Image 1 (spheres, one colour):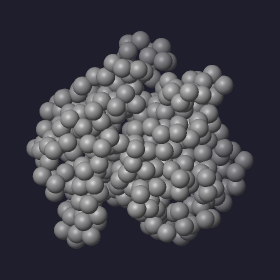
Image 2 (image 1 turned 60 degrees about the horizontal axis):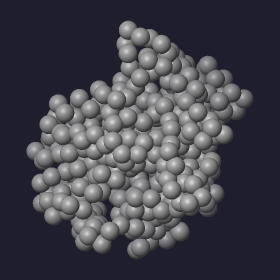
Image 3 (image 1 turned 45 degrees about the vertical axis):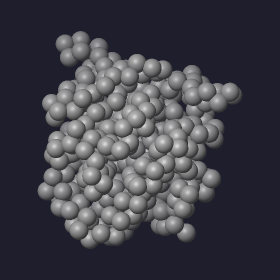
Image 4 (image 1 turned 180 degrees about the vertical axis):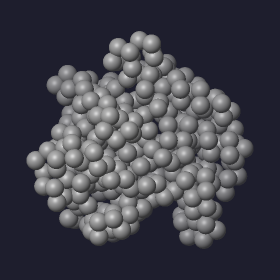
Amino acid sequence: MRLPDEHGRFGRYGGMYVPETLMSALTDVEAEFRAAQKDPAFQAEMDLYLADYVGRPTPLYFAERLTQHLGGPKIYLKREDLAHTGAHKINNALGQILLARRMGKKRIIAETGAGQHGVATATVAARFGLECVVYMGRVDMERQALNVFRMELMGTEVRGVDAGSKTLKEAINEAMRDWVTNVDSTHYILGSALGTHPYPEMVREFQKVIGTESRSQIMEKEGRLPDRLIACVGGGSNSIGLFYPYVEDTGVRMIGVEAGGRGIASGEHAARFQGGTLGVLQGCMTYLLQDDDGQIELTHSVSAGLDYAAIGPEHSYLREIGRAEYTYADDTEALAAFQRLSELEGIIPALESAHAIAYCLREAPGVSKDEIWVVSLSGRGDKDVQQVARIMGKGHLG
């Protein structure tokens, strides 16, 4: 059975919970997406830009010193940090802007938390000469000032959002309001595998290149599939991109790592499967953090890209059927992983990706050396260095 179904649902998750004014636009986006999937010219153009502009395929790197340090399974890193702009977000941004051109749209909007999706959107908008506006929570703008400037350098207008927690949820709200107002001229490049149909499916399809490449690469290097796939999960685009090509391979464990923030008991986290319940947020039904009255709770993570109250609906479905497992790493673990990977491999990970590395630091010791793990290194840590320096008391960088 193809998922999502014709109603945009993964089992009971997903769907289209949006204002009537957006239904026509969403129908147009889905129709163009379906047509593009069947169009060899679109696929050829996509492949060309993925190779020559994005720099794909990204390497699958054997983290030898990390492996030796932990004394357990062989750990490979899928190096999305080496893609153009420094993260996996460019895969989806490229696919969606090619769709926007097919639809004749002249204006692009997006939301961003960590800033990497905003940078990716600004990048492709500059490449194809389209007007671009990115919404970003004021808190995220402060902790990701470098990415704000990168977007502005490429001609994008970054609009700060001061409502609520001033993070990703509010940025999405403002982008949705903009789209409702300017639906005829504007395409909304949503950055993660969440929100209303067709975005969870569409983003997955543009991100599955991560898992598809890793399959062939690990077969070439090891002659078999990995025992575990590990990826951080905010909305869930890098993780579903890694997981999806392996869904039928039931011998491969798929592990998503959410943001444990300051600890689950504190309530200051973004681990939806630890304290969340089923609800509707920003277009879809999924697990989210809400109070007994259905009001969305404030979230916290040291990582701006994981600081979101809901999780993509396909992840909720994979967890329900027992195909994927979800755990969490807290801020302290993520910061330790950020430093440890830097010291051992000379690779500074994004704080988002550091949550996946934290899982390895915690779980790999004692696991058989015969196991093979593939970790999605979803982004590089340049954007986080000043923030981490402040946390570590390195005042000369703050």
